[in-house]
Length: 275
Image (cartoon, rainbow, N blue to C red):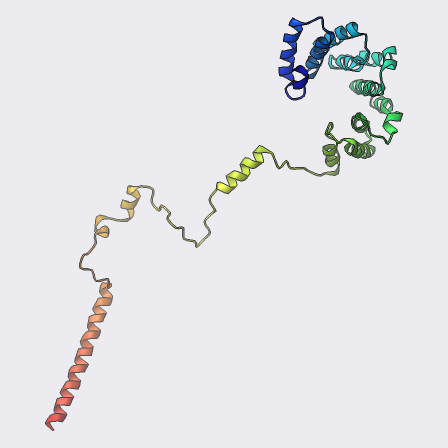
């Protein structure tokens, strides 16, 4: 359970490791797992205690680099450097030796010995074109050391090499390379960006000048209506014929003139008949 939760839920893994220690503190695997759980949660003093116990029980040297890194975490980089020169380092496999080199370079950086950190990382493993599990981390650490030493131009090349070797995303070499090149990435899956886009979609379109909005509430309440209309304005004339009064008057005048013209025509016809 501890190993399963170390990467995703380190604090929960730590709590499980405490329970396991109470139940089986004399088991080397339990002490080692407890050490890594403490290490991942930055409890370096507890981690160092557990790693030492596991090493005494097994006699193995593979925990030596992480023990040295605990010394760094406790603010004792000089002890980490001293451990890098101990005979136990020769018992490590290639991956362990590279890890020890990374810890030693980190200790040099902690002591602000930036040029020495660069030299510490220069090795056949760094120059090799073969990609191993530790290649990306080694190249990345070298690029960071170059940055700290004020050699940013060289660092860009090594960030690019680290990104090329980093197939499982163990470093953020691509982001560091983009930062140097001035390229900015936007996370399309960022929840905050999705919320902003949703708010923009829900926001009503602004009314353009001259547009007439349909079904819009003009007045907020009845008082606003009363402000613009009184009761007389709202009364409906049942006899209203749909003609504006002024126009109705004009229509009557036109009808009278038409009647006069017809009357004159009739009189003229009558006169002709009498003649």
